[in-house]
Image (cartoon, rainbow, N blue to C red; front, side, top):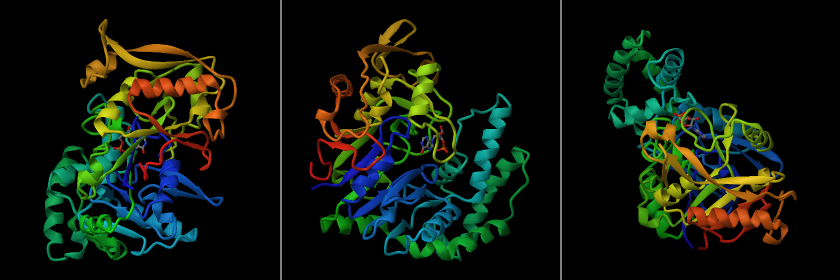
Amino acid sequence: MTNVVVIGSQWGDEGKGKIVDWLSERADIVVRFQGGHNAGHTLVIDGTSYKLSLLPSGVVRPGKMAVIGNGVVVDPHALIAEIDKLEKQGVKISPENLRIADNATLILSLHRELDGIREDAASNSNSGVKIGTTRRGIGPAYEDKVGRRAIRVMDLADLDTLPGKVERLLTHHNALRRGLGESEITHDAIMQELTSVADRVLPFRETIWLMLDKERRRGARILFEGAQGSLLDIDHGTYPFVTSSNTVAGQAAAGSGMGPGSLGYILGITKAYTTRVGEGPFPTELNDEIGQFLGEKGHEFGTVTGRKRRCGWFDAALVRQSVATNGITGIALTKLDVLDGLDELKICVGYTLDGKEIDHLPASQGQQARVEPVYITLEGWKESTVGARSWADLPAQAIKYVRQVEELIGAPVALLSTSPERDDTILVTDPFED
Ligand code: IMP
């Protein structure tokens, strides 16, 4: 028995929701360790659909403990709204089933506002880079964390030191706002914002590293729920078109306070083709009818922002990089059925850069924009793979495609998901038992 870390191996939206839900039923504790309410997925349990952005998946299942780790940036308004919405749906949320790290950073309304101001400014001029963020204040909050001026969950309980912290935060933000031609924010406004949420947030505060250490020793099964994808990682992603956190599996340790030796099985959720939301390089993007086909058939619209996702062929060179940077033990391959009916399928195995063959995406922004994919072509299949529950249900060409993916990325398929339904899954290896 082991713990399991679930991460996305591409640019997010790999279908983590269904797999995390499936695994959370078998876990005792579900921990988020990075990102914030920029993530989003819908869980359908016994016919009721629940939309989660910030809360870990386990929260809707009775008897599970959901944990928001220190690596997460917590918007208290989004937290309260999500709790209230779930409670209206009959899910009781209390410290019995939710704990939040006392050292997690808060996202305040000034962060959300700054995210929007910057994105608008970059759209309307050539200054700055438009990232296509979710405008939730994620980046600005992480900036304050690294700048050592953030307000953290525990600060809400310390009214003696809070005014000084707010002062420090505003010295920075008001200078920035003056430069951007925005009005300044008063000390009172931030103090009021913080005091208005304190009573709702503080009951959940916990020393998470200590709690996880005790739980690990008593043999609890811990599931770490990653958000976004490895190619959006602040270090390993397609910088600067990335999110502001480390999204790779190692962050499960740093973002929760559990040592890396206890992480266990690393499950990389991998879509059978590629998608990306927002700006940035995408070597296998298809701006043609096949890209259109994948987007429509795969319902590729963002759960958080509703934006249309860009679609393209499977990029094995990129997933091979994710296998290495995450230490992926096995993958869960999702949405294979979206490829049903295509005459032929391409898989990117490497690139050419200025006429020279390379086997991985270079780190430089300029070079990433110039690479051309090198493809192999496979025969497609006409039969439907929707709902397949064993290898015998799959056409031979689909099995060939899966085997080719495994070989090219250097990791085995542990799970194959063949529809949004929980039970439409081919289980090769149970990550908790591996
Ligand atoms: P931010 O995380 O809001 O700062 O956005 C930075 C980049 O990450 C943008 O390209 C977003 O579209 C992308 N992004 C953030 N969260 C997700 C997600 O959950 N799925 C897919 N892309 C995301």
